[in-house]
Length: 154
Image (cartoon, rainbow, N blue to C red; front, side, top):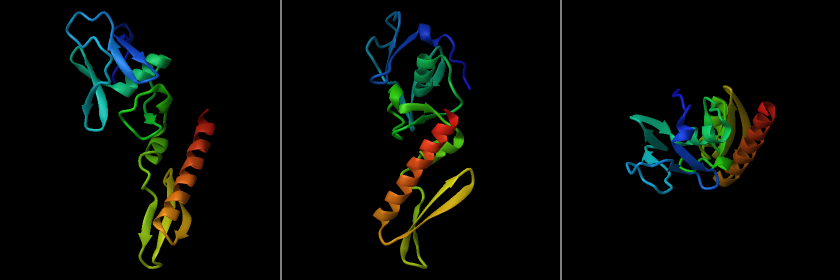
Protein backbone atom coordinates (compact mmCIF):
# COMPACT_ATOMS: atom_id res chain seq x y z
CA UNK A 1 0.00 0.00 0.00
CA UNK A 2 1.40 3.39 -1.01
CA UNK A 3 2.20 5.96 1.64
CA UNK A 4 -0.12 8.96 1.26
CA UNK A 5 1.68 11.13 3.80
CA UNK A 6 2.38 14.59 2.42
CA UNK A 7 -0.22 14.59 -0.34
CA UNK A 8 -2.25 17.09 1.71
CA UNK A 9 0.39 19.70 0.83
CA UNK A 10 -0.21 19.13 -2.89
CA UNK A 11 -3.91 18.36 -3.20
CA UNK A 12 -7.12 19.95 -1.98
CA UNK A 13 -10.25 17.78 -1.84
CA UNK A 14 -13.91 18.80 -1.97
CA UNK A 15 -15.88 16.16 -0.02
CA UNK A 16 -19.23 17.38 -1.39
CA UNK A 17 -18.45 16.61 -5.04
CA UNK A 18 -15.42 14.30 -4.75
CA UNK A 19 -13.16 16.49 -6.86
CA UNK A 20 -9.53 17.48 -6.31
CA UNK A 21 -7.46 20.60 -6.99
CA UNK A 22 -3.71 21.08 -7.03
CA UNK A 23 -2.34 23.44 -4.36
CA UNK A 24 0.45 25.87 -5.31
CA UNK A 25 0.11 24.94 -8.95
CA UNK A 26 3.21 25.99 -10.85
CA UNK A 27 1.49 25.79 -14.22
CA UNK A 28 2.36 22.15 -14.81
CA UNK A 29 -1.01 20.76 -13.78
CA UNK A 30 -4.63 21.71 -14.32
CA UNK A 31 -5.66 24.63 -12.08
CA UNK A 32 -9.34 23.62 -12.03
CA UNK A 33 -11.13 20.99 -9.95
CA UNK A 34 -10.73 17.50 -11.41
CA UNK A 35 -11.76 13.93 -10.58
CA UNK A 36 -8.66 12.07 -11.72
CA UNK A 37 -7.82 9.92 -14.72
CA UNK A 38 -10.16 7.04 -15.43
CA UNK A 39 -8.35 3.69 -15.54
CA UNK A 40 -10.45 0.53 -15.83
CA UNK A 41 -12.87 0.81 -12.89
CA UNK A 42 -11.27 3.52 -10.74
CA UNK A 43 -9.98 7.08 -10.83
CA UNK A 44 -6.22 7.62 -10.48
CA UNK A 45 -4.18 10.70 -9.65
CA UNK A 46 -0.51 10.89 -10.56
CA UNK A 47 1.97 12.85 -8.48
CA UNK A 48 5.76 12.70 -8.81
CA UNK A 49 5.68 9.61 -11.03
CA UNK A 50 3.48 7.69 -8.59
CA UNK A 51 -0.15 6.80 -9.29
CA UNK A 52 -2.67 6.83 -6.46
CA UNK A 53 -6.30 5.73 -6.31
CA UNK A 54 -8.44 8.87 -5.93
CA UNK A 55 -10.80 7.36 -3.36
CA UNK A 56 -7.85 6.44 -1.13
CA UNK A 57 -6.52 10.01 -1.33
CA UNK A 58 -9.99 11.39 -0.55
CA UNK A 59 -10.37 9.19 2.52
CA UNK A 60 -6.87 10.05 3.72
CA UNK A 61 -7.38 13.80 3.26
CA UNK A 62 -10.62 13.65 5.26
CA UNK A 63 -9.51 11.36 8.10
CA UNK A 64 -5.71 11.41 8.20
CA UNK A 65 -5.63 7.63 7.76
CA UNK A 66 -6.39 5.12 5.07
CA UNK A 67 -7.80 1.63 5.75
CA UNK A 68 -6.71 -1.34 3.66
CA UNK A 69 -10.05 -1.38 1.81
CA UNK A 70 -12.48 1.42 1.04
CA UNK A 71 -15.99 0.67 -0.21
CA UNK A 72 -18.03 2.87 -2.55
CA UNK A 73 -21.44 2.63 -0.89
CA UNK A 74 -23.41 3.27 -4.10
CA UNK A 75 -21.17 0.85 -6.05
CA UNK A 76 -20.02 3.61 -8.40
CA UNK A 77 -16.19 3.58 -8.36
CA UNK A 78 -16.10 7.05 -9.93
CA UNK A 79 -18.18 8.69 -7.17
CA UNK A 80 -15.58 9.82 -4.64
CA UNK A 81 -17.78 12.06 -2.51
CA UNK A 82 -16.87 11.43 1.12
CA UNK A 83 -20.44 10.38 2.02
CA UNK A 84 -20.03 7.54 -0.50
CA UNK A 85 -16.80 6.15 1.01
CA UNK A 86 -16.45 3.87 4.02
CA UNK A 87 -13.79 1.56 5.42
CA UNK A 88 -14.59 -2.05 4.58
CA UNK A 89 -13.55 -5.60 5.24
CA UNK A 90 -13.00 -7.90 2.25
CA UNK A 91 -16.34 -9.54 2.98
CA UNK A 92 -18.25 -6.24 3.10
CA UNK A 93 -16.55 -5.00 -0.07
CA UNK A 94 -17.39 -8.23 -1.91
CA UNK A 95 -20.96 -8.17 -0.62
CA UNK A 96 -21.47 -4.66 -1.99
CA UNK A 97 -19.97 -5.41 -5.40
CA UNK A 98 -23.06 -6.30 -7.42
CA UNK A 99 -26.84 -6.14 -7.19
CA UNK A 100 -27.23 -9.32 -9.28
CA UNK A 101 -25.18 -11.61 -7.07
CA UNK A 102 -27.21 -14.09 -5.11
CA UNK A 103 -30.00 -14.68 -7.63
CA UNK A 104 -30.13 -17.49 -10.15
CA UNK A 105 -32.64 -19.65 -11.96
CA UNK A 106 -33.10 -23.11 -10.41
CA UNK A 107 -33.78 -25.48 -13.32
CA UNK A 108 -35.19 -28.35 -11.25
CA UNK A 109 -37.97 -26.27 -9.66
CA UNK A 110 -38.43 -23.71 -12.44
CA UNK A 111 -38.16 -20.90 -9.88
CA UNK A 112 -35.77 -18.08 -9.13
CA UNK A 113 -33.53 -18.79 -6.14
CA UNK A 114 -32.17 -16.12 -3.77
CA UNK A 115 -29.20 -16.80 -1.52
CA UNK A 116 -26.49 -14.79 0.15
CA UNK A 117 -22.91 -15.58 1.11
CA UNK A 118 -20.85 -13.98 3.86
CA UNK A 119 -17.57 -15.29 5.26
CA UNK A 120 -17.92 -18.45 3.18
CA UNK A 121 -21.31 -19.27 4.72
CA UNK A 122 -24.22 -19.43 2.30
CA UNK A 123 -27.76 -18.75 3.47
CA UNK A 124 -30.68 -19.83 1.30
CA UNK A 125 -33.29 -17.07 1.13
CA UNK A 126 -35.94 -19.02 -0.76
CA UNK A 127 -37.30 -19.68 -4.22
CA UNK A 128 -39.64 -17.30 -6.04
CA UNK A 129 -41.87 -17.29 -9.10
CA UNK A 130 -40.20 -14.24 -10.64
CA UNK A 131 -36.66 -12.96 -10.88
CA UNK A 132 -37.79 -9.58 -9.52
CA UNK A 133 -39.14 -11.18 -6.33
CA UNK A 134 -35.87 -13.04 -5.77
CA UNK A 135 -33.84 -9.86 -6.40
CA UNK A 136 -35.94 -7.88 -3.90
CA UNK A 137 -35.49 -10.55 -1.20
CA UNK A 138 -31.75 -10.71 -1.88
CA UNK A 139 -31.32 -6.92 -1.78
CA UNK A 140 -33.25 -6.67 1.48
CA UNK A 141 -31.12 -9.42 3.06
CA UNK A 142 -27.94 -7.79 1.73
CA UNK A 143 -28.90 -4.41 3.20
CA UNK A 144 -29.67 -5.99 6.59
CA UNK A 145 -26.37 -7.89 6.55
CA UNK A 146 -24.39 -4.78 5.64
CA UNK A 147 -26.10 -2.79 8.42
CA UNK A 148 -25.28 -5.56 10.94
CA UNK A 149 -21.64 -5.65 9.80
CA UNK A 150 -21.38 -1.86 10.14
CA UNK A 151 -22.88 -2.00 13.66
CA UNK A 152 -20.33 -4.67 14.66
CA UNK A 153 -17.40 -2.62 13.38
CA UNK A 154 -18.59 0.76 14.75
